[in-house]
Structure formats: structure tokens, C-alpha cells
Length: 165
Image 1 (tube, rainbow, N blue to C red):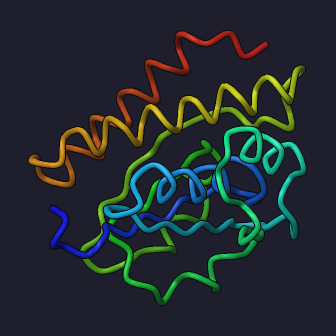
Image 2 (image 1 turned 180 degrees about the horizontal axis):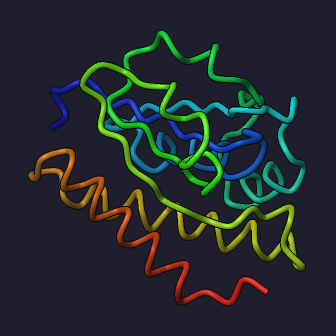
Image 3 (image 1 turned 30 degrees about the vertical axis):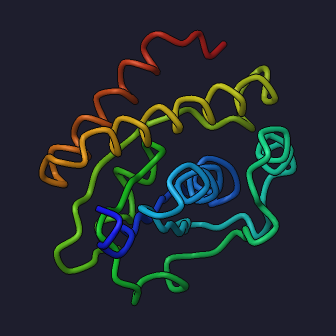
């Protein structure tokens, strides 16, 4: 696997200020030889959420390069996997965003800024995304679609087990 170019993952949320930026930073941080990542939003907020940046900083994850951007900034890049991280992005305009041969999957997590405890929710969502990435990479010998499906199942179980209130 080290001889192959990194898999390119695109993480999508509506605002591209929280979940998708966490995932964009986490993927290459956790698996620098194997994953490259980007992110975009259907209605970008224009800047990263401060608690998203604080969460990454607290875990030693580089984040200075992150910015909130729309689909037009990433639509011409060669993505291997497109991951929606919010239900609105999954149901909304994301079908417009596609890449030839890319796998599309959904790892649904709640919106941390909308939570009653945003700081705690950012931390839990970061942990959930990390679990998904670890499961995705632990199954490197399986077809890409199966890996994406396994990670999606982890996200679903993680969200069912969490108390997001």
C-alpha cells in the first residue's frame, strides 16, 4: 500500500465550517502516507468554526490550511471517495458533486454548533470521524466500496450510541 498514491477523500457538509473541516484535517494527519483529503460545502459559511479549530489544536492536528469553500473549489479534482457528513448534504445538492469512478458514502454526524453543548459535541464528532477513518483504513485489503460501507456503519452505530443532547 505504501507504493500506491494516497486515496483522495472529499468530505462534504452544508456549511464546510465544522464536520467536513475536522475530517479534512484528520484523514491525512492519521494516515499521512495513505490518505489525502479535501472538503467543501453546498452553502459555505466562509470561515472555519472557532471550536472546530480549537478541537483540532487540542489534539495536535495541523489546521492552519483549512478554509470554508464551496463545491466549485473542488469539483474538478480527482476524488476516490466522496463522504457526506450531514443529512442535509446527503439529501441536498451533493448529487451535483460527482467524480468519475468515485465512491459516494454517508457518515452522518450532528452539527456541533447547533448542539446544546457545542464544545463537547465537537469533541465527540471528532472522535466519531476518527473511528470511521480507522475502520476505513483497517480494511485496506477490501474493495473501496466495502470499506466505505463499513465506515458508514460505524458512523451510524456511533451516533445511535451517543447522547447528543
